[in-house]
Length: 258
Image 1 (tube, rainbow, N blue to C red):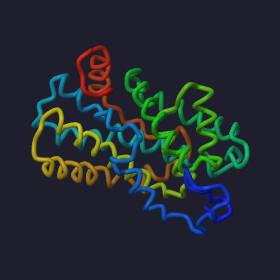
Image 2: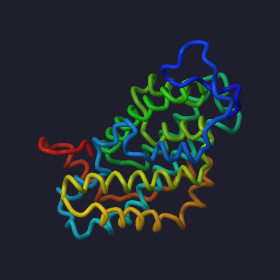
Image 3: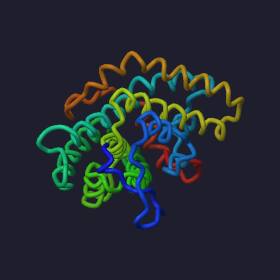
């Protein structure tokens, strides 16, 4: 991002000078990975609550986290990477035309939906997307990539978190490999945070599990980071998780949305 595209932070007085430099993408990744960011993630358990209610023993959570990091999380990561690519490369990159960017993002969203069979999980992802889009509009609202995501959300009534993350990556210059690692980490950390409410234990134990999940996904990072088309998004699913999510959506007593 050049100084010509920088915008003042929300609340900056009109006419105040804008900083001539943009934050390093690593700082952006740290911001997005911070659970204190008001993006709505606290209302979700990354499917851990449905798993535990469905019969997953608490002792199997570490293995479950590794399995998720190497399947579902990679679908989300690939979606974000391809969304960012669609918004920065090729004839359909938005530039000053949000509608063109929305068309490109819609194709990515359809590919994501085809890899997410559970309607409950798709709904949950769109609710998360709403919170992420609010963050994106507040921090990068003048960027064409965010404008494209906003246009698609208005047209379709919402878009999934992974697609919004791709728009943020395009707006902030977040490299594809960092997008993959961020997605995997956020998924694992969301589950670890939820576990402290569902099965209270030493938080440092679950912190170890987060690192183990990230390590398990690391060999897949180069491949997912090179995805450029909707067809190249990983299609590694978790049918048991899908079934648990559908059952969980019917329950009235639950701590998390999904």
